Image (cartoon, rainbow, N blue to C red; front, side, top):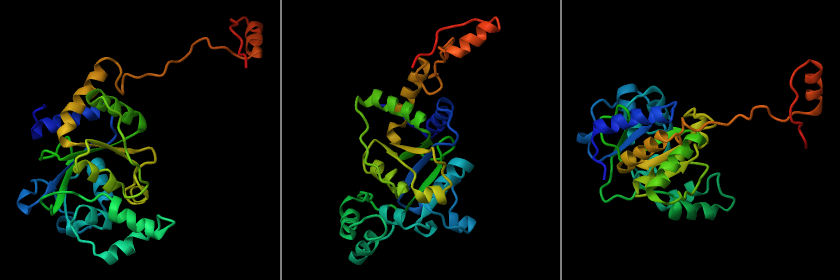
Length: 272
């Protein structure tokens, strides 16, 4: 078991950025159950800046601009985090209304999905919101870490995860509500998850088309980072993998003919 402190989390965040050559900071997230728990240095989007944010926008500002936020119910501008984190309640008519919008050919399947399969936070104690900050500078120990990265960086993280667990990662992919699917299953006990940024992240959170979200429980951070470090040390980490360029490669016949005409070396001919 790895000991964890805020300082070690910060150091790990910086090291992951180096090892994976991350363009943006990993995001640390902590559930907040009382206003007295709000970490120093975090701002409320509405109270302090006069803006209400979608969760994907808040994530973008944290990882790109290295801001730190605490988002309570009044700070949100998207329905799905409010619903999934239990910051608001749904009545029967809400399931009927929200479950039939847009994404299911069969409206009743949409209602059933929202009632039975959609990820809602499971917690004995109801949170009032969450705090988010760059992992390298957060002032709290995270419940969850979310890393936006490219598929090759995901590959390295998956190798580290598989090294520790001995298991392949099993995920359920949804094209929408990435703020929810990236976080709630992990907060509910799943150790790791992968999520594709949804249309809202693309249009309003300005997420690049080649970005994927890798999420892990905060308590798994040190173990995962140690394995990323291990693979890096043996030349099999993200920075160590290199494409092998074939020299003196076979070429079409006319290449050799022209090279011989010019007094240059011929070589094996390209056959196809």
